[in-house]
Length: 350
Image (cartoon, rainbow, N blue to C red):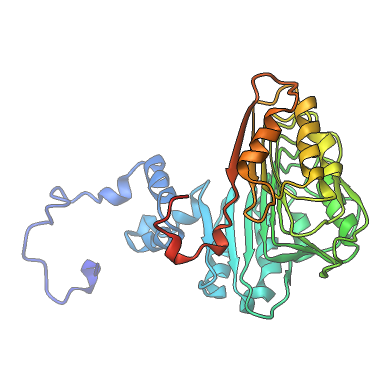
């Protein structure tokens, strides 16, 4: 909208109906209302409000609780400008990093750490034949973090005993790699997040290699954990320490991993086990858990299509197991790999 000073002809008509009394309603809105408006806008639209009226020029930068969301297509200079201009502490930030912006990440994280970032989503965009991009060690300077999601990146080795997240409540690691002394880095990162309540680890790699599951054993220690999701294509060597407060767990593991995981889940209330093959050791895992979990309310089992045992056979087997919790319900479903569904199957019954 052009400014009145840009007009070529003097005003000869009455004031706009939008402001019949000549009052600048945009500038006179209460601060609480303008902040609520800004928080409902996308980052791009919020910055554009600077052009509405002179008093709005920097209001987006002074709006507390504003979510800073950057996509991979955003020019690095624009990200720099927003992080430099935003004057409040940052409650939430999302950085989707394109390969060409990898060199800027360290500076961005340092800027967010200085603004007391509390919830950070950091996702790297990978291209074919490209290895994981490393997260800069400055990540560990974000001491106020309560929630952290890392995707498609490499976790650096911890530099000192102070590296960790003392206030972290939720941690999600998706397709990440632990390189130098990977198992110990993995173990220490979780142990140095003592308040952790929710942990999701899906398909990690250790040392950047496929060792056929021949990793040294290491332990997840998270005594305050209530929600756990974990899955891997191979045995990562992990085991669980006692989880006295665990409530929900979703496990996508099989084979030798299960006996190392099961003792910590006897206090679980809701358990989902994905893609079991019906092997004896898997069923023994379920049997043991059902006999020990006194507060179990529901256990949901997904039987893989390649399993030699049908859903009916698995269901019948489970129904014969002794249950420590009489109210525990047992649900057996077919495991569906949504990544391999053919488009011609869209109309078929699940």
